[in-house]
Image 1 (spheres, one colour):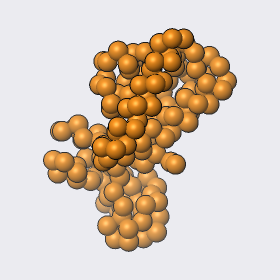
Image 2 (tube, rainbow, N blue to C red):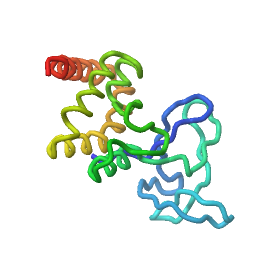
Image 3 (cartoon, one colour):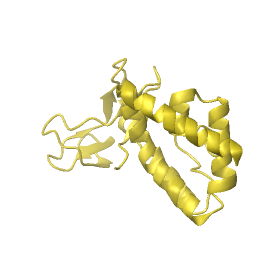
Length: 171
C-alpha cells in the first residue's frame, strides 16, 4: 500500500488527500510547471494540472506544493541512517512521528512517548527494526485516513496498539 499525497489545511488543520483528477478520475500525478507559470500536480493521463485544491472541511485553498508524502520521506531518512525525516510538516525525532498512536491517543500521551522511545532505543539501532520503521512510515498515513473513516478500524487498531505499548513498556 502506498501512502497518498496529503496536505494539512493551514486554516482548520484537516489532513486532505490529493483528490483524483476531476477531468478523468486519474490518480497518478507528477509535480511540475503549469501553463500559467505556477507549479502544481498534473494528471499523467489527461495533463490537467492544479496549483491549489480546496480543503475537504473548510473549503479554503491549499497550495499544491503542500501535498507531500511525509511517511515516504521519513522512511527514506530512516534507511539512510538519519534518526527521522528532517523537514516537511512532520517534526524530526521527538516530534509526532507515531502517526497511528497520535491519532488514537493524542500527540503528548504517555502511549506515544513510550512508542517513540521504543522506536529510538530498540528498533532504529537494529537493521530489521529500521526496515520495520521505514515500512510503518510509508503505510501509516493511509491507515490513519482509514481509521478516521471507520469506527470499527479505530477499535481494532486501538486494541493492537495498546498491546504493542504494553510490550514496549515491559522491554
